[in-house]
Length: 127
Image 1 (cartoon, rainbow, N blue to C red):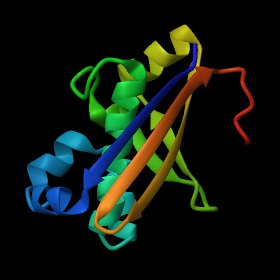
Image 2 (cartoon, rainbow, N blue to C red):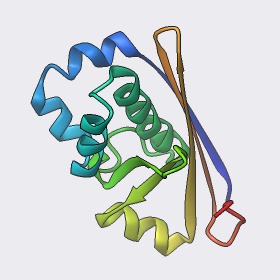
Image 3 (cartoon, helix red, strand yellow):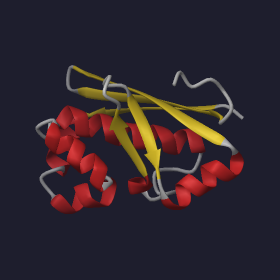
Image 4 (cartoon, rainbow, N blue to C red):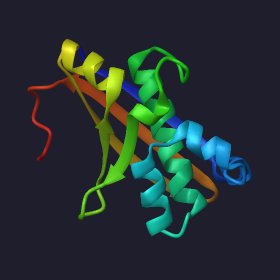
């Protein structure tokens, strides 16, 4: 099975939401909150991560409330490349069906974009 999910988020929408600490704590893993802080809490970064979670929900065909968003942390390798770090029930579910997820992020002109590719775990993942 190969599925694709795409999402676009208006950065200003997220900029308003992040003023509410409860929003951040409901949507993002502690590792993501640390990433945001290390990058100056830039709204573009936060919006891109949120778009990735929405794109993942589309690729999984379960909707944004189909899993705990904190179980799909979007982090960055030393190279800057984004990747998912799955935990909890979501990690077990993906492992049980043998799926891996790749993510691509971008932001420009007040918009953040994310594309997610779900594919069999054994596929080449560029690592």
